[in-house]
Image 1: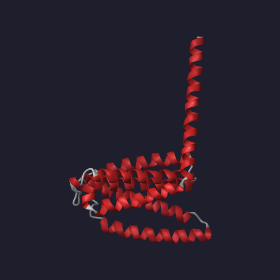
Image 2: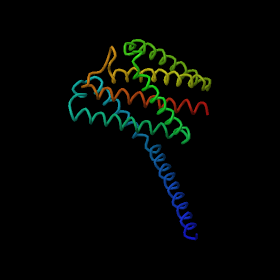
Image 3: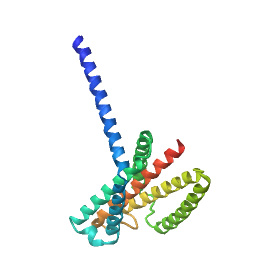
Length: 214
């Protein structure tokens, strides 16, 4: 009986120590990221250069192992940018945004794999919608700078999230194939890049939406 009680006490202390250690590491990691903003500038630069190289240069996408190296650089740099953005939000919001993004991506992937509709020919409409959202974002930013009203920014985040969700279906259908427009099997790097950019974009703007509602 005594041994069982002692075992429970020791297990409770071990769990508490692990929780405290995790919280301490998380705090130090967050402080380090915020105290070294130049790293996110470097990450953005790497991300922009490697993304342009993969999008515009066919040999960069198809030559092994250069294509995998560039994809790893894009993934790591974009992940660091997402981590930097997450540092400005509460842990609860970050976890909610992570779960919401995962749920959205699962649902959209399921929808994209259905055979009863095809949006791979909607590229021009997404371009027009993207331009409209960009113009609205500029107007919302100017209005917010003078009025401080966050409603327009919240609407902007919702619009970007909605548009990116539709683009995620569009890109997923191109990757899966069987539609009017599909990616070649040799373009697996381009497909992975498109999907990753879509998912990170959804996550970042869901963060903004959840913080706005809170």
